[in-house]
Image 1: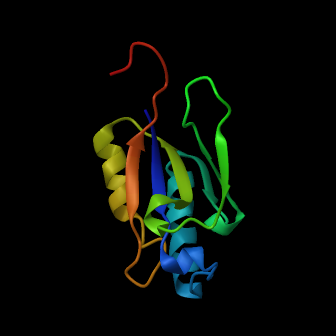
Image 2 (image 1 turned 120 degrees about the vertical axis):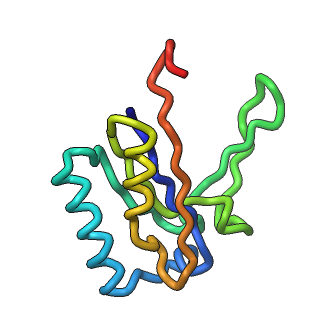
Length: 122
């Protein structure tokens, strides 16, 4: 089962502030643990929303409207993701609970989403 751990943005990540060395070490260890367990598919950090575009589909059948970042509310954007392939939802939750605060400063927030893989899935 594929799951994505979505790291929500914060004022710190939107400012482009790099994590502390301590946090980078903790995240490196977490990623190493994911790899050694054979569950990590991909993990990437994203540039702040000042480098992003948002496409809004306001009229059916019309081209979307593009808006350049930065976007006003950091909590509406993401700063990174980890894609994992695990045996169960419970295993995905366990991995999510092991992740260090991905932003630091008590600002981290992670959402866990199951990836829809095709017809016949619940």
